[in-house]
Length: 145
Figure 1 (cartoon, helix red, strand yellow):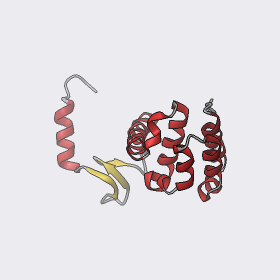
Figure 2 (cartoon, rainbow, N blue to C red):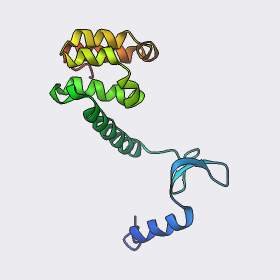
Figure 3 (cartoon, rainbow, N blue to C red):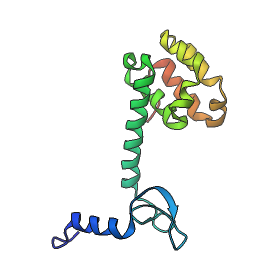
């Protein structure tokens, strides 16, 4: 951005003219749009923007898991990532439906926790993701290169 253009004033001006919408909508030209006039159909988002969104989504998922699953605090980093990954994928509500898995986790039985992960509709839906995550849960070893 050039030095002679005040970013804050430009932002205020465009928010005034375009509006701010945090949910996707179709603009007057029929294009899928979000934020302050971001045309998702033609422009999309950059990889940097996608990573900012991802970081925010990870923080939200981690906070929800930390708040709702008491065993989380005592887990190693790899097993914490498994739970955050699952919550990211299906939401905290979906993760909390894994009653037998969470009971095994609370008991510190990681082999049973992993078995319960694989004995689910979720595992059948996500395929290799569930296999990788269940191995990480059972062993506490990273499976991500």
